[in-house]
Length: 212
Image (cartoon, rainbow, N blue to C red; front, side, top):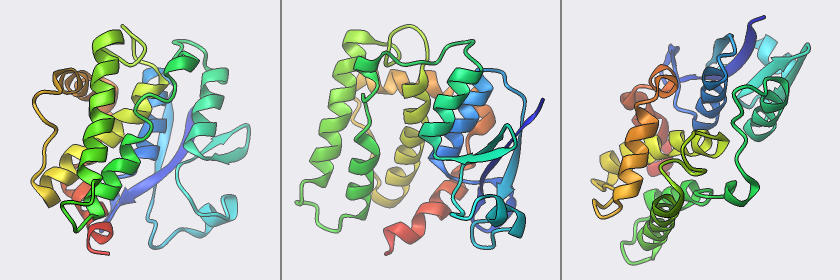
């Protein structure tokens, strides 16, 4: 059985996979579990009627399971883990929140117009905490094998690298060697190669937030 997953289409290119880290997280989970699925690309500026009928909130990602459309990537990933337990992607509870504040710190720094407001340092602190964790427990968050926490963080790190590089000419410091190694490991996985949005569309997707 092929599952249907509604995900964001690229800004200005309705036939290209868009730049939603939460959609990519769900696709990564399906790829890693080798669950057959069909991605339905949703143009978020002109949402199709069937999509709004099935999902009145109009948010992506949503997945069709047992004839019901289910939203929220946290919920979806949890259900997929239950329905398709092999290979297990469950993250040990004590590691489940590792890296969880990186996205918020990245967005605050991206939107910041004041270099002295502490947003850059806050992001560096989060990345340093991740580096320390990986040094002690790596190469992935829970050790030798990839888990749900990595699949949640990978798309966010991809966006962070592209968007801060483009809009702020900013890169993750070389001193955070464990983070750099982690990113290389994640981005070279076949699942990531298959589900990553093109860089230009990541930039296009974030541009309105930068200029807001």
